[in-house]
Image (tube, rainbow, N blue to C red):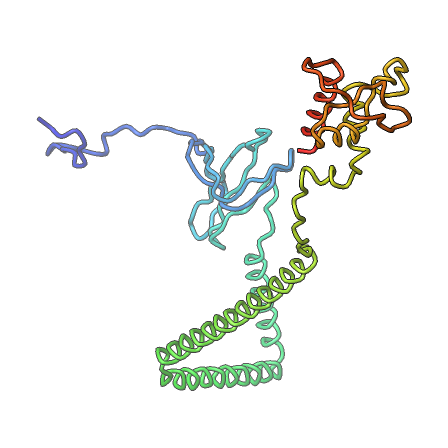
Length: 320
């Protein structure tokens, strides 16, 4: 079984390459190749930018009647990615570059312009030296002076490198690290001191504010007043007035019921008669507030005696 991908072909002993028929292909035949844009360009039709390295399926052909030192020059056809306009460029073996033909403009390239400027200056110098011998001497003098300056600069760089070769970079870095740590430690200590001072100041201010507020808001404690005696008001009121009020509450006002005026017996007379052991005087025996005399004791209890007892009970309850 043969291999799938064979690089070496079998040629029989009687193989004659001259007998192979040659195909007659046109000289300007085009091939489809895959390539990348060799430089930045801009389409003239739509203004689309095509950057370097953009891939295209291009048509390739050989330029007729053009060559450089026997090397053929090829032309490529691509299409704009936006408007599909045709853009062509060809190879430049002399400058190892590509040249734009039509359909687009090559964008600015400083390196290429610099190289072209250097070539132009070199060509002008060669032309001057060819016709003017003094110009050759001047150019040689300038070149020798420039070379001496370059050598001096190179020697300075060498001396600088030798001086730096003896520098201990590890020690420098270590010293720098120590200085940074010391600086950070000092900054931390300063911050702690400032923080402690601020805390102490705020604490003092708070204590002062608390003391001021206590002095302003704490009133003088009043002396506790003695609890009033429930019967103190009875002591302040005159005794006769207190008895009249109690009588008015029980019977009524004397002026409002004139028919009861003859039945009223003053409490003082009743009290005196009771204390002497006698019966309360009759209402008819009282005239102008004076008792006519002791009344005879009766075994039966009259309504007037019950009225006196009622008044005594009221007085006793009021006095208590």
